[in-house]
Length: 397
Image (cartoon, rainbow, N blue to C red; front, top):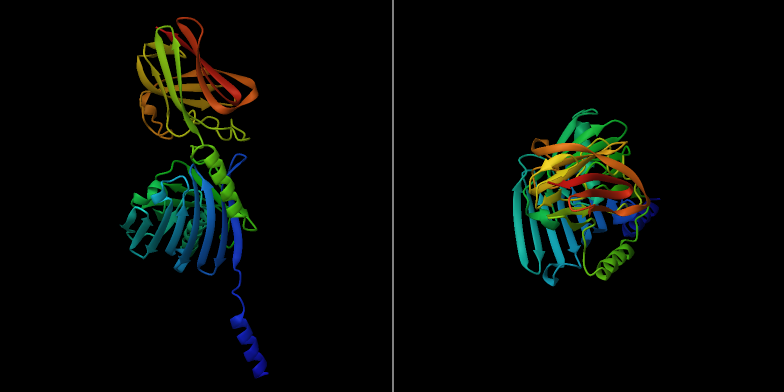
């Protein structure tokens, strides 16, 4: 009997390691896939292979070691960015996290950079946009901390976050606030990203889905029971990027130029795609100020004094905002310029006025702003996307 037990233990010791838990995530922007991730977790070690196009195609291989409470203790990431210059195409990042600091070392063909940040006693977790295994770890660590403190729905947990790639790797630690919601849900607000994301979990803190509908990223993320073929998706993303002559923003920037008589106009704005989404009341919520496009605020410049939707404007540059309603929309002209499209400040409003709302067929896939002259003094400002078209009269004074 003893011999049998010994042989059984020996066989167990020599057998391959258990596969661990394997799963994945997919993030979509409307009908378009923007990231996929394959994840394996064995105890306190998480390994991830991921690719996203937001907007550059980036592929990452990551190994994470977790400490007490699910906090990150060590993270090693290799990043491949095919559209970067050769010296920066391959990047190796190591993050070492202690109770008091985060030390991040980045190495590529240009050299090695190391930065250290004090955590000031807060739990520090990694944040990479479009990498949802990190979102899951971030939420899970906060939820465990909340459970240990017997917190209830409505309570918040304040976290510190550090950045691995993109332009964020030179930033000091920022904050993220996780708020507990009923029904196995939680939401997160970052102090640098406008909006609040919401996620749903099972009893083991596995993230089942994540919605960015109330953030600037507008993604819908789902957990996959089986890991996806990241290599095949990455090859497709890279081929699309190369075919397009390099990376492009998901919502391209465009400039409209027009004249009405002696007045010259320009409108600089972001042009999101519909991507099969429901726009009004969903992507563009009712009764809330909308940036009227994507990314930076929409800028309107006139070379002469005009009246726009009944509002008198001097020659100069303004930003245009809108408030969609179930019936119609309002146009806002704001004196502040150069800001990001989520930085609306009503204190700078020049005025508000109703716009005329119509339906168009076929639907307009890419958000479009136009200025059309009627005669030497009058014209129309028009905004169209999906099934809607809003217009406002322009008169040159």
